[in-house]
Image 1: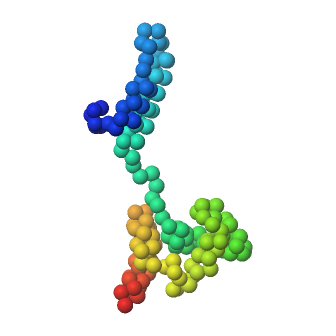
Image 2: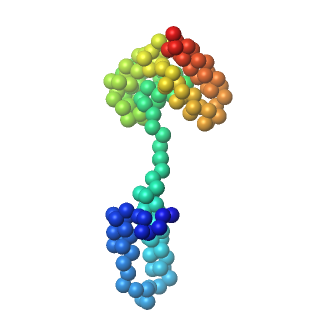
Image 3: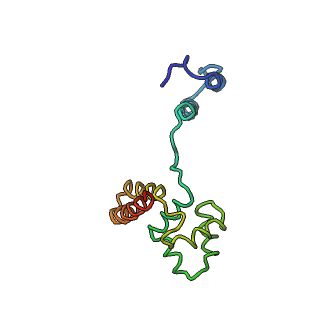
Length: 154
């Protein structure tokens, strides 16, 4: 933890204003516990503001669609016999994206030369499967990645 003197001014003001106390003489044990729990929570908030950490991994819609495709989710969704438009509406909720854009992705995802099937996207997908330790999907995406890199290097 940095020295108090090294903290930015807005953090110093936050610390000073939040921790003023009229004294501890009239507090019982439960009140102390509440006060210390509050102080602990505020210190955690300050730590997160001073030393932010990544809370989620960012991915593009194309990468998300490819991930769902390789996990078999899109095939499973196809088993319900609904139109691509309805699939897109369901996926738009999951992916927080436009149903129109997802519909375009759905119409291309099975095309071998789809614009979403790039080496950059497959590097991300392959890395995700490596982190998860899913051997068959690692192997599948490495084969696709090698083919894409060969095509892009021509």
